[in-house]
Length: 616
Image (cartoon, rainbow, N blue to C red; front, side, top):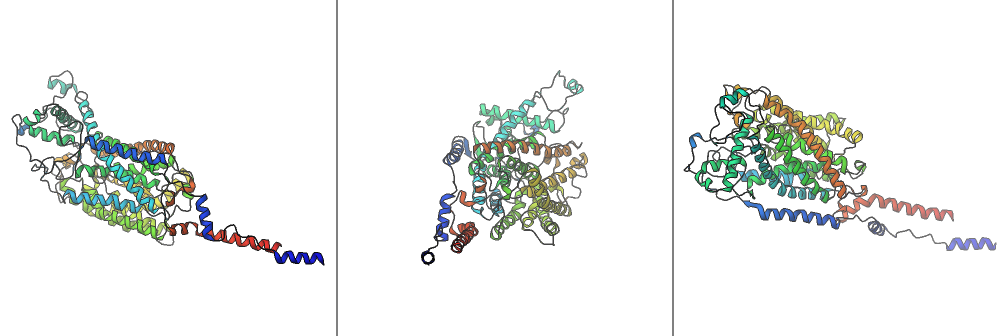
């Protein structure tokens, strides 16, 4: 009885153990203390600051704004011979109506809108539309938009300078051709010229009739202006004596003045930097959520350098045309560069993270960004189009976007199953048409052809998102966060192929003969658009080469960039796709992050207490 009473007393006096945490709030505080994300490292912050400071130093020493208002186009000088002056086409791309002087024939070209309007629209395209389209991850919207802004800001600063460096490099390359041309000189031609070997004599006048125009000769004529610019930069008196030659040498070489160590700054130069930023943002889309900001700095500098090199090879050296949207040199390059970079730099199994997905509100924000891209795409594609075709390019881009939106959403219902749409396709397939039409096809496509090209781009984007993207993750281990391979890579190849097909029938009769304006409502100056103007298939061949060339350069440089970025730092898998890794976040973010975990803690505490009471 005594033992029984003792047991009853013990049972009566027993107090169940208190839970490890008295409430959910205390549990969350303890969780925060033990699992606080690291944020930016001190070394990372210093690297970011040093990179920005170096750019500031370069701008302070070498970048000069363009004079406003521009000087009038000069009258012929004492040594000018305007009637026989060689007005060779510049190798640098210019928008319609741009010249270093006002009043020139080029300055008075027809243009759809003034350059400031284009500047603002492309600005919105880059700084609002693209960052918002990346903000679909449910817990990474802060970082997606902010890091895209950061990437674009650094990239444009560097791109403005890098694209002008490319012009300087090309002049050096061209001057080497004056004694060693890139085309064969027959012995018969040398005999007619009375020479033993070839050494092109620069007159900055019309070329000798014996060597008529072609891509090789055009490069030699441009090289003469490069040499002339160098001579005038060393002796400015020549620029006063030959003002017409001086003006054209500035235009051909891409300079604004005769100072050797300087870079210009105008709306046109900034837009040139913006176009070099688009492939960087495309590559960034592959890596969203998987890289620290300091790794993005590596991505920016290596991407811009690689893009500039690839552009130089494809457009300047090979002589292809990709100036109405950059389907290959911009979109294909950016997609494949990012894919190669993520294959090396991203943590394995990143796609298995439960936060690597969207939610209702963030998907709406991303869709809004895609709709803004849709609205401003015609301005982006048409900026560098020839003046005669600028309006047609904007209209063809618009028609291609219409086609991709309808076809892409239709394909989405088929590929998704149950005839239901997928938000992935609404965000991406709708703008794939702008990518697919961004080639030389944009200049000559009939309205139905523009819609067809856009529709094919939309279907290819949807198919890629549902099948190829899964294959790349499962079989190749390449995870594309935003799906830019679907949105830019494969539609860009559609644009490349359509451009090749449109150029195949272009012969000399199309370029200079009676069929020049066949089926077109405008007279397209093929001799100014194409660099290969012999009509012998070289233009189509150059267009064919640039896609494999671009993919090769993008993959190699992307692998190098990914390796360097991984050496600098890397994120642990637990920190991927979460804003609180780098940001202070509001309470509702914490609730969404820990809500399910805290419910499990409460249930475990209650079960533990019940088990102990039952055991006693």
